[in-house]
Length: 628
Image (cartoon, rainbow, N blue to C red):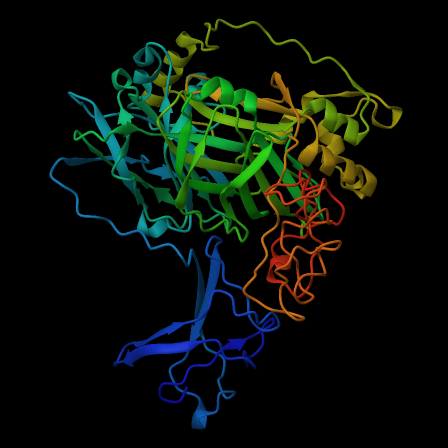
């Protein structure tokens, strides 16, 4: 690099970056000393240089890659740069400021919850560890106002996410107090008590890449049952150990900040998306689309008349996740997207403070959509908690606080059976009766287990938690080709996924077919369920038109007329006519200038940046959009 020169470059694959034919980067300043070289530069969000630039997004994850060397190019030749051994990458949100811990007043106190020196097993690549805590003594109502992660320096690569759930049961001390001095248990493992499944509503949600968060000054999360919050909490830590590293001991956790100077409004967290269940099946070698619906029936019943306001969120999927969107529908019309990330990164799941808060009213519908890429896998993938399994969730931070904690859906068992060609299964075998109470909890057995874990006479068992194993208990009766085979054997067989027609039927059922909805309150047990009661369908609604970058002019420019007769071609110039087409293909079906028509998706023009975001199918109603 010569003096103050800076070059706009591009590359495809592992090649020397080429100088861009259109220079869109401007050097704003810089300096150099004995240890650092600092450059400050700018580039437009959209350069309209489709051939050699990527459009930068203000809403999506952007992956920065960097490399540097210890010497300048020889003779100032811009093409003389060699391979730089110092290199790396980082995912960021370009338009959002990095979290900075504010100065806290003397009224703010800290509550640390940490893992009790958990030793990661040497034979499991992923494990979820759960531990119960009780809030510190609090003489009056307090508000949680923020948190920061406490990640052990040596284990940064192992701690993937941490959730702190509220635990709700009548007479909570009767069920949870005995577990406070127990080191914990593997979540959903053999030793996880049933009572812990009543820890369902998250207070804090942190994931890899996050640095912490402070909530807006007008809201806070209450602590203590007598004040509308919870007294007992369960911390869930997701550990990854893909290389089966030995001797990993971890005490990571969270520092929760709270104050007695109360905020005006109590806040809560609502989990939306696809139910965490092995019924979330992603066939191999596919660009797949999963949907989870929170129906109008659930919001009408559980939300206050004035609704709730969403102010932040975390989107969550696993290794197959490529994009996640939370859509919002009211009275059969789609409202602006609540939150989305079209470049989702499993290793960067930061809380997103919404630029514009979204109000959700009773009767509204929230649709979580996940684009998944299984093209590199040869076996089916199933929903579950392991890194190799999948999720499609959105954690929404909102106010005012309600009792609703979890609203999600998934395809019905019947519809998936139809897609697989399963006609009939044998009735499930009966379970042995137990001495459980009305909450399904055997108090005596849990007391005995807690005493044993505390004294060391009971072993804390750990093993692979593979939810698809539940399918071993479902045995097919007909048709003949599946007779006496378990559902597990069928869906884990590679031959099953050679049937492309069956895969297409399953995709239609998963994305737009009959679903079973779970609408859970804070006091509802969270278990892995194959069936729930509420049957819902993908809603019919008038969708928003696809986004088009109108700053870039191609083939004569983007039309600004009504596009009469053919909104795709006409207008001033031969670009795209406006969205109010009078009876044209893009505008209202009934004609006339309307803000909302039954929009028909626009066939992608390869010149437009929006084509890299959505791949709309021609002649498909926008209330049934296809994103792949």
